[in-house]
Length: 321
Image 1: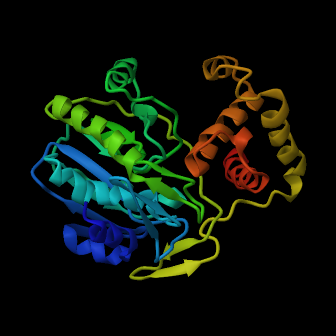
Image 2: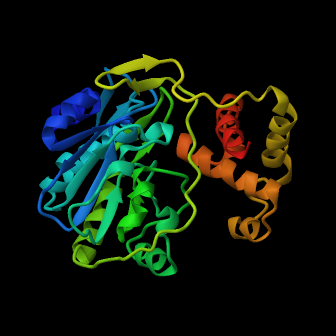
């Protein structure tokens, strides 16, 4: 494995990726498209919540662990679509986006020059898969046949591609503790997830999975963390890229959120399906907490540290106002 190439993908500035393909500059940053003559599209976003220019690589038995690298979300995915897929004989066109972390992915400006059979992304902790509004019983059962756990997700770039008549899959790429300075990935998990992608691709690359856009859009949550803001032709570091609205009048609501997760609806007490079937405003809020908590920190809200719960609260309450 070429560690130098992985290090480069993890630490290069966003602007350096523009030369890899046809790049359009939008109000939310660049959008780079690479046509490799495929009928399958692979997507990754280049922006981050935190950044460390000196990630740590630890050699393990026939493996590496990458740690102290918060930009693994989604630079590990960028490495996957740019370098790993071609070496594995997986032929995909590539779309590189910006501003995903603030819910303004530049994927929204993409106009496919061809009809794709389906699209995949590697912007997911662990090794499961989510499909958002693309999910169907047929696809859920199909992916389980490749040993995938089908989970829930809140948002990523492919959510902006619904109108283009193809299904989308966001595969786990093995990072954990995303959106924190302690983000890490054990590449043995990355490879374990990738072997399933490889099998799925070879069996389904020539099948067109059509999709009819769902009328509503999935919730978009802006993370309350330091990041980089596009200013037209450069990136400017800002302490807050999209601050949640003030919750001074919502202290009671904040307490309610903690009561919901810590007392009334512990994850082991009710099956997720039961919660969805019994939707009311409180249960729906609990569901959103879990979805965002898993996207931000890789585990259900109930198990988060208090400061992590507060960050999730801000994102969810901002959406519910």
